[in-house]
Length: 177
Image 1 (spheres, rainbow, N blue to C red):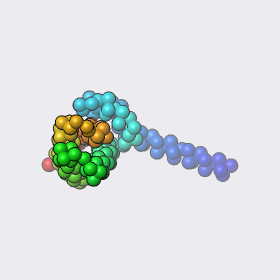
Image 2 (cartoon, helix red, strand yellow):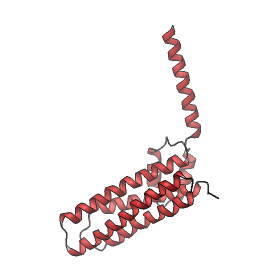
Image 3 (cartoon, one colour):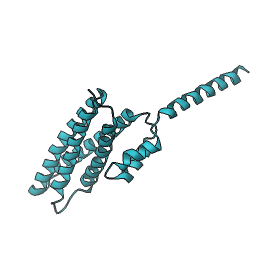
Image 4 (tube, rainbow, N blue to C red):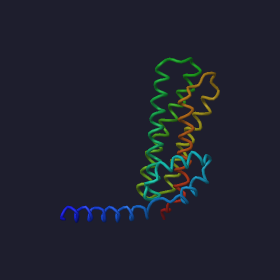
């Protein structure tokens, strides 16, 4: 009997908690609103659907920045590996330029986190825009090469898409006075 009461109390508490969490979660309508404003809505919807548990826009912005930072760091390491592995001088120049862009992008993403934490959506927006520009510049640098590392191109495109999502979210966050 006591075990039954404990189970009922636990289940009641769990249901109450789930009700509270679901009432604050990002809705599918809000996801569509965000994704409709990006350059790649299907990428956005796919990404946001995997992050459905985000309770609010700030948490979703953080999750998006986390994914962007992880992808930028992975790309930076790949670029270092390509350069260290020995490539022709023209390719080395392009990949070195990309490496510099990604070093800057990672710093901009770190600053975007700081702006998000302080409630500065506009500051976050500016730093995410700079990170997006870095990925875009890298794509421009390597597209002229005869042989391009596919992971650098793929990651740069994904970073641009993730930055696009973060930019839309940053525009939806409250503005600091």
